[in-house]
Image (cartoon, rainbow, N blue to C red; front, side, top):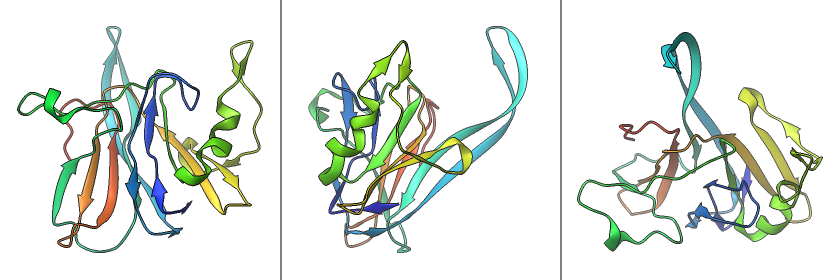
Length: 181
């Protein structure tokens, strides 16, 4: 995944369309970064029925290989830290169960294919299929990507910082209320 000076991980109520969303602007150096997905497997219950399954637990772009010295909750652009009670973390909603990481400088272009739905379907988009159900939308003129991932409502964004305060990784948990980085 190619990122510029600012990346915007987001879980939104409306995908990339206008409307309520939770965006987090984090400055990271331009470059190509690997994105990792953690999986969990086991039985679960849904509407009273039991299933065996594999689910995405968290997604993260690895910004550097430096040791993470500490974790902090990533506050979205519209999150108010003063409105949080002790121990509470801001969670995001994701009605479409999709989140993304993208270069903020190319945000408008990268999100354009997600803004229009016709007859309940997303507008066709030029995308690159990635493993694990993810996809990549690229803006070649800006050398920037948007990478989608599973993001169920209730997830939390965590910033892993180095001893110098730089962001080493961003972790997005997938709707697991008690999940910690």
